[in-house]
Length: 122
Image (cartoon, rainbow, N blue to C red; front, side, top):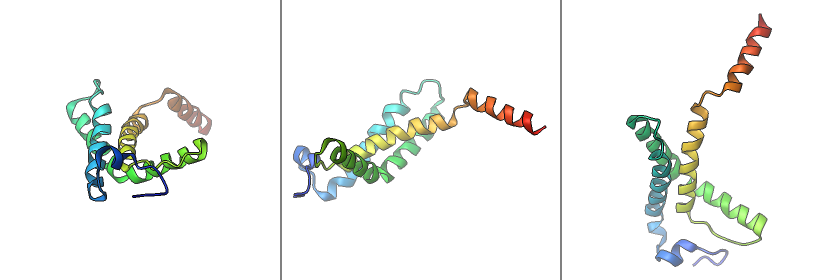
């Protein structure tokens, strides 16, 4: 038992350390499907690609996001709270879909800025 923090995952589910990766996969799946399924303006193939990218990012960055959330709880709330990696996977996979879509969008202000730079070069 971890005495430095509060582990919600083991209290609720009784999950051991060996079950942690399974919960990370479930969390990444949940975070990926939340946003990939709600994208109505994209084709099925783009949704599948976004889902796969979010799933991979969610699994790989789950520990990092969970530790950042734990740090924020400690820093701003003064509570020692051990956030499970599965919650980090949900948040990171959901944020990754939004970040990918934001980067892929064509913003009008970017085009205005680029056109001003091109005009000044001539």
